[in-house]
Image (cartoon, rainbow over all chains, first blue to last red; front, side):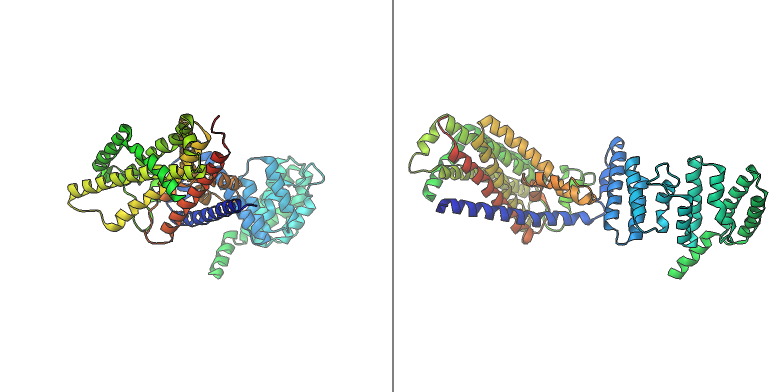
Length: 231
Length: 263
């Protein structure tokens, strides 16, 4: 390489280095001003026309939820983030993909939307049987179970399952004392099914449980106690 | 070598004798004088995020009158920088100039310095006129730090002229002028990319591509930020200006050295 060519190359590389270095200093200086709340994506969105604003806000929210999935530090946090993302996504394929991912992670109370989504699914490779769902409920803390039971009922109802399958799903509730008053709703449901299917034994049992449940404290009281303890 | 470069620069600078440039200088002086107390007409800062960004931070901000002067100077930079070399090529004048002992690179640097000198003179005349206007209207001179900050806007001229000169080595005068103008408009829009990326969530993966496009254009926004005149930012701004200038001039030199001037 001739002397002049070498000099040109060195000058060019030096100029490039100085360009990137000085640009990064200037950029950081400009970006440091963005820490003020007036420079946020929300501020910009509020200034956009309504027609663009909603779709832009939706994209931004999805991106933030994706960030939360990436930033999750443990499985429970990750599941919570994926669930939030799945519930925000309109695309069913994408939603399903996320729910499948949740099933691959250790089950936590927050996983219930994925479990209920695949509850008695017609595709055998993805299906969650009633027994598996019940096992999952038993693994969750008591305060979370009501929500999961309820979600399972909604999922089964949306799939128009047979009354027998609904009975099978709710049966374990009749074998253990109700922990909270909120369970009255579930026993009313059981009574309703028992009445329609002329199952007097089930009707009697659910009536007893309903009475017991009405004497129990509501879930929110338990939450309040936990919150106070945490303080 | 420097003598030859300065000779070309002087030859370019002498174009100021042309009536068009002379009229432009008079216009700049009158306009800067009139604009000297027009801060009240500056853009509505409460409604523009960009305006708020430019005016936030500690230190001195560019004045509206000096922003106007800078824009006028850059306009002159496009006119002079984009037309000089193509006209020399068209009129075969370049063949006379780049014959021995003047090399093409020396000719290019001379042309560049000449146009820069014209622009800086234009800026200084307009700045003096704005100062005189301020003195007559308020009875006071601008504070030194504020004045110094305004003169830092001069550094936007160097990469700008280098960019127009670079385009003039590739295209004919009008085409170079148009392409340089479009490139500047693009650069201004692309200047907002880092701000946009900062506000967007990390998972939006287009950011890499956006940065790739961003680095292709100089960020003129940096020249208009509010910052302390003595500090890392102002030093970086000067380094930034010169590094881009060198890059543009090197690309221009490569093109001029490989170009068939008879074609």
